[in-house]
Length: 424
Image 1 (tube, rainbow, N blue to C red):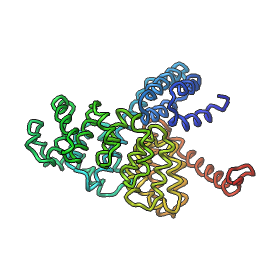
Image 2 (image 1 turned 60 degrees about the vertical axis):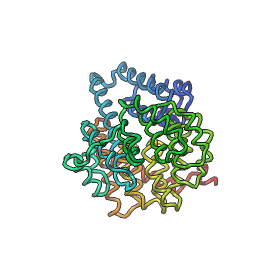
Image 3 (image 1 turned 135 degrees about the vertical axis):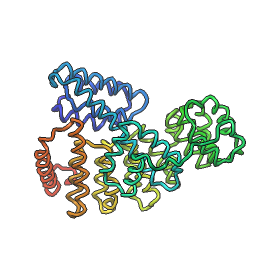
Image 4 (image 1 turned 45 degrees about the vertical axis):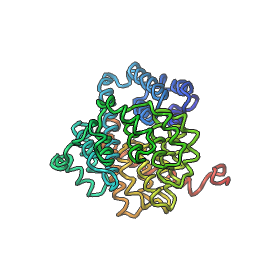
C-alpha cells in the first residue's frame, strides 16, 4: 500500500490471478476504492473472465466499487456514461473476439466434425459483435485458407447445404452409434428433460461404446446437467482414457475439488490429451504452475503434445501467459512458432502487448519482423478505436518503445552487481 499507485496496481494485477482466498482479494481491492483509475475496470474484467466460483463475485464487487470511485472522483468530468458504454462494448467485443479465435482453431482440425461446428458459427455470426470480430480476424496474421472460410461465413453463401439433424431423441434406440453422437452434438437446452433418462441409461451401461458414453457426459456438461459427479469420479479413477478425459472436463466445472487431488497422475500421463486437460484444470487452482507446465510442453520435441498445448493457450489469462510466452518465442526453439501465436496477441489487444511484440520484432530479420509489427499496430488500432488509447499519442508510444528496449538491453548486457543474473 506504500508503493506508488501505478507500481502497486501492476503488482496486484500480477498476483491476483493466482489468489483464491476471497477475503485477501477484498482487502487487496481496497487500493482501487481509494485510487480512481479508468484502466482498472478493464484489468478487473480480464481477471473475472479467467476466474470461477466465489472469486468471480468477489472481483465483480471490486470492479463495481472501482467504477463508483471513478464516477465520484469526476476525473472523467461529464463523460462517465460514455466511459461505461465504451467499457461494455469492449467487454462484448473481447468475449466475441476470443470466441472467434476458438472457432478458427477448430476450423482447421481435420478430426473435428465440421458440420455442427459450422452450424454454431452460422448461428453466432448473426450477433453483431461476433460478426465484427470475424471481420477483424481478416486482418489477423492467419493462413489464407482461414480467411477464405471467414469470407464464406460472412457472405452466408456457403455451408447452407448442411441439413439439420433429422433424428430426434424419440429415434435414439433405432439409430447407429455415429448418429447418436451427432444427435448429442445438436441437442439444445430445451431437450434436457427428455435427454435425462437416456443419459442415465447410457452413462451407466458398461456395454455401451466408450465414445458414445464420453459424448453423453460432454453433452451433460454443455447443457449444465450437474448430477453425474459420482459417475464422473469413478471414470477418472478408471483406465479408459476417453472416459477419463470427458470426466475431467465435467468435474472441473461441477466439482473441481474431486479432481484436483488426482491431477498429479494425469500431468504425468503418456497421453498428451490427458496432460493438457490436467493443465487446464490446474489453471483454476494454480494458474502460474499450469502455465509453467504448458510452456514446458511447448519446449518439448513431441509434436502432438506441442500442437495440443498451442490449442490450449486461448484458455489462459493472457496477462499471465504473455511474458512466459514471449520468452519461449525468443528462444531458438520458439521462433518458428511466432506466426502461429501472433493471432493470440491480436485476439487479446492490450497496451502491455506493445513492448512484448516489439521485443519479438527486434530479434527477427526485417522481412519476418513486418508481420509482428503489423500485429502490434493492429492491437494499437483496436485500442484506439475502443477508447483505451488516443491516436495523437501514437508517435510518442513508438518513441517510448525504442527507449524502453534500449534501456532493457543495456540492463541485460551490464547487470547491476546485485542483479539475480549476476549472483548466480
